Image (cartoon, rainbow, N blue to C red; front, side, top):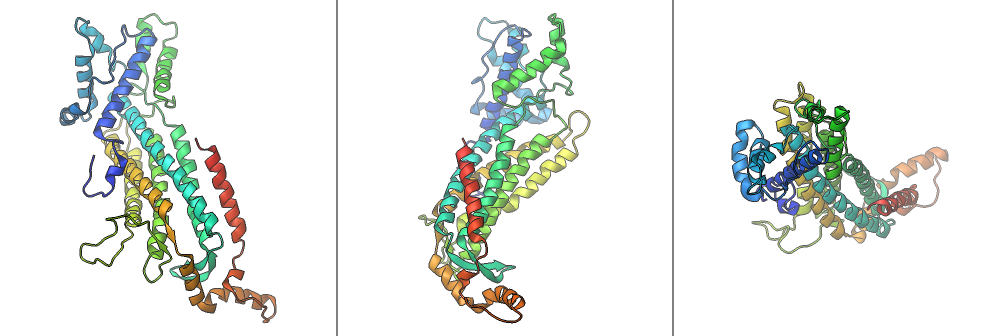
Length: 420
């Protein structure tokens, strides 16, 4: 999958491509059919995985308009191809029996998104490791603290990086919760499990409702998803994913904004990692543009509107199955997830190779003069009835920096120890 107008898209590889989503839909159909067979409701196991593939994407996409989604065409193909030579044609009719299109699409998206979330989680671990190193190396590298773009009081780059680290630790915790609760969607036509109940009743089950519930649980277990009640119009599972992804791009955007600011030639305290062919200009050969940070800011700016679309769709989900709101989620979620994976990879590269000029930071702090100690001097005058005390060096006014850094490092080490 390529995207000429989203530089770096190739970093997401095959995640959430049409072929990946199609493969996930087949896995859902397979898990459901296996559950029917294991429960004694369908007569024969069939092997569905591999019956359709990338070569079928174009025709399925073209035919999806007829029913508003690609599942109808997929089921037809599976039924056509699943029965081996000499087999009973009726065996294929058990494919998809008891499911609805939304069950397949929703569950397949959970599977495809899970792969993307796993990738982001891995990148976050790498970023946390990189930031631990930066914080430890620069916990006493003094620099000007800036508020509202102006010089404020002294700080250290270690504490600045610790702030970035806290943001990523928050994101990693949120993401872990989402990954652990990705749900299966097995509701049938209107979320009542009616088809499963009827199939169980017709086969003589003493407790057909329990059989229907077990079908959903078995499908969830086969796909390693959470078994939950049908959520056709309760779209929090989708918005929860969107919120976690946007929180990630928010955190990377904040890092990138600091980097592009501190990499300005007149400040020159930070610089991106050097890579041949990156950062150049088409007309100004002297430039070394902070491209990774620019692209991370792009992702941070573009992600929230995508999540907003997911929330709008959730609010407009109507009846027992949504009419258009659900359809608006699919590509929105795919786009948001792929772009977040791209940003995750770019953020890992940025933090692993970030160049810190401690001498420049100290020089800028020294050049700021006594103004950066104005707050301290005001407090001293107040506390000493107008008197002054010794010590005018900026490094003497760093507050509880060491304690704050220690707390962040301890949290990060715990996170790394507990992560798989």
